[in-house]
Amino acid sequence: MIDFSRPVYVKESMSYIQQAVEQNHLCGDGSFTRKCTEWMEEHTGTERAMFTTSCTHAMELMALLMEIEPGDEVIMPSYTFASTADAFVLRGAKIVFADIRPDTMNIDENLIEQAITPRTKAIIVMHYAGVACEMDKIMEIARRHNLFVAEDAAQGMMASYKGKALGTIGDFGTYSFHETKNYTMGEGGVCLIQNREYIERAEIIREKGTDRSKFWRGEIDKYTWVDMGSSYLPSELNMAYLWGQLEIAEEINRERLSAWNRYYDGLSALAKQGMVTLPFVPEDCEHNAHMFYIKVRDEAERIKLIDFLKQRGVWAVFHYIPLHSTLAGKKFGRFSGEDRYTTKESLRLLRLPMYYGLKEEEIEFVIRAVYEFWG
Image (tube, one colour):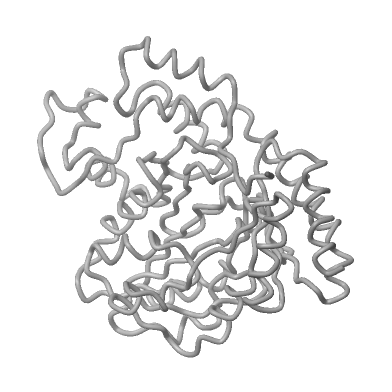
């Protein structure tokens, strides 16, 4: 069986985990957290990177920093993961879903403004498959209406828009280090903060509502509870595992891009025949090969193709159920305008195997199997 995804494994990470154990500091913000933080800030250009126990928690940290309150509205695509909405639902916000662009599967920037009401507090974008949303227009709309912009770049590490790292264009951004992502520590995330005014409160919220970070820096002689917060610090064991990957981040990225390009080239003839639609990457975007997907005619054809590939030992999967159609989505949100593409395109999309270590012969096997489906 060719797996759909495998967690990244780097041999050096195991020795780093051993080092973390021997340092007698397994809780958060130890030496490996500092190494990863320095790397993240240097490579993304963010003002401050704060690692968390999950990308979901990084989103929750953003929602707290934006002071989202009951009655506020936030605009986001319906085609995203539940965590994108959960962080704001927990603060009492109403989710306003907008339709997507069929080419990138990202929120349609031309539909955002019509979703804005006097209660709107923020625009939440999700960069699907590591391909950027049209951020220039989104930022222009947000500034004109005095709204926050938060980037759910869970899939977007090492990707960029007009030379800027995803997650560093809006006010806040997040990456995920879940085992399915390009870089992983099993579970984990990071919150990227662009405005220095939010850094001190973010440190407090992340440290259970205490000013402990100031204490460790020697700025105060004791720390106390000063604000609301939670326990968002990841273990040093997680950070040590991640550090081994960050050391070779460019190598991992190149290998994934090579696999993505092989899929694209190999399936281009099928696309020209109109059998499948291949991913689209706008000219201003540099993606990170987080996934390779194809779109088929409809859901019925997708079901048949999944079964066909499974019989040949290939694990291919669909993706999100649009949030506005779910039980929680109907309870906590509403759809703005017409669902012209969100549901239709989601039912066509199929993801092919993609992970660091995927062999060239395995990619060729998958490509041949897809061609065989159409005879």
